[in-house]
Length: 136
Length: 136
Image 1: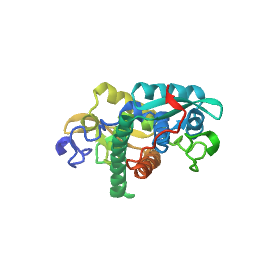
Image 2: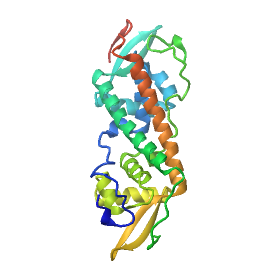
Image 3: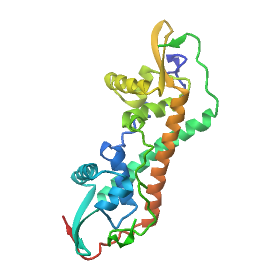
Image 4: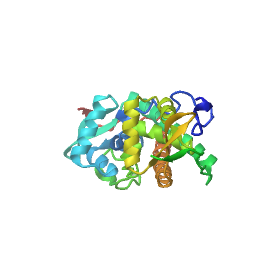
């Protein structure tokens, strides 16, 4: 960024796309799906529909819809089985899905680190505007 | 969660809503807006439209749209000024917006920590399914 752009430029070595976070795949980034995926990564043996519903505080309809999106993206796999005489559906990560999720988490980590770095630098040090600015 | 629910239950002390991440406000969580907000928190003196556009790799239309959403939510404030003879528009966090963003970042941090904890526990230790499960 060119520091001649005015008082509002930072002069820091921020490059083009520095805050674009391309790795935040929207399939994984959506709030409810992020909860589902974090539940599943914490339960590699898989989770039943009702367990996911409770852990993520989702309705049947919402959970079903998001699980379909995740399955279509090959992030999770679905298993059917009979447990204690009842037909059950179980969900768990595919191998590739787990890798993609952990890649996504690394991008999320960069966002958190960027925000923390800014927080540390600015500790109660909010700058005043240069002359010539007024509320829009 | 009740460990009697079957082989797919974890037995861990996961409570209702453990992975719901209520604090992930959708206004802040949307991918492009997250980039804009992280740019702004790193530049407390404010950023010009064109700087934001470059830092976040967004088109004029997309950037305008997301800035409007952020302004309507009182997360950012807009200033007009003349810099080097040109009319400019400058954006920066409101005080409350910065607080809300840092709260949001703390929730994001929990997501990252939850994923890391799972990653550490499972190091190449992917469990096989119990008997009675087949692909759906």
